[in-house]
Image (spheres, each protein chain N blue to C red):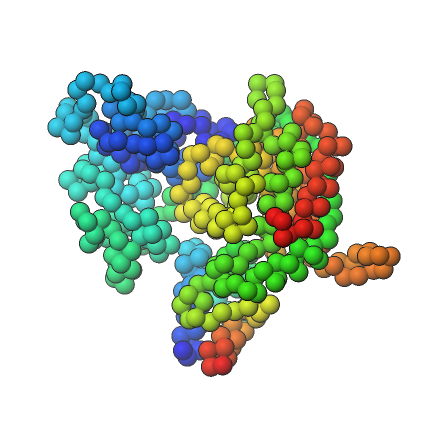
Length: 391
Length: 82
């Protein structure tokens, strides 16, 4: 059971996405775990064969518990367990879909013949079903081996619902507890210092307007993408803000993986990582952001996305407050906050003009850096934003 | 499309973006972003969905003409004719 962020103590295994004997590759999702932050997909980071599954669906186990055994190529046991082998039923019968598992289900809930093997669902169909709040278990698949295609989901959407919509997997009260635990730890342990800098967005927003004018709606970019990229690139000059503080020492991040703070409607907040934020183009970052927001809200985030952020960036958007000063998410050492963009008086060449301004804040860990370095970082962000074409 | 059809389309698309949304709570003159708690990304997705479904390309400068149901229906109806 991986630790998916600070202060996670246990998780409930709600779905096995592999069967015994399945070959897996690094990056594959092998299970879904219900945490205080909703359903999280757990990946593996080795290539091999699933040789043992220890934890049945429905069981809640502490962080650190071994969930399954994967034999790497060459170390496979002589008698690879086969489908006919004596394996526990509960372990072999994955709950077909996460949405069903969100209901309180006993460990044997998946033990029907249909779910003896995992139903294949096209990712686009899964997303569509989640959007429409359709229970995949009720959808008839017409693809290869009964797999569910997008067309099946669209067809099912036309059938009037007999029952209420599928219950949402995310328990907001639980998420509040997780946020409270992480933020309490932060305020208890991390000696924060705070800096703010007001930045003129006249140039970057004018550039973005031209950029978007030539593009169809789906290819347009939000100002927040410029913020994200500038915040990530500025870390090249101040790498001490990018990493974690663990066991009494700062450990620099291997790469810049910005945790992007996403507010959930109805309350709750989650900040999954956008891997190699600094190396992605603006279009790639917009796509990554769109994808993360969508998955955060329906509970499809991956374990690695929650465990890997090296810094957090939050942007409150057009309906947020003018300034946001963040609380560092431990064990990270900094959080950058972009307030609402607003037209305000600004002095340009000795004259007052109306300019779109944003207040950018940095909250950082005094055990690692101090205000001088933090100030240099904000100045770098401001400078980078003035050259949006280079972002 | 009639005004009623446009109204229903907008609400349908909002419900796809914000599954928690209750379309019955929409009032013609209220700000959709307030009613349904839509952030900048949600609104960008709404404009993209309108484009996908109706082929109407709303330029960024006109996003503010979609902020209420009443204005959005009038704007899209005019665009569809022009």
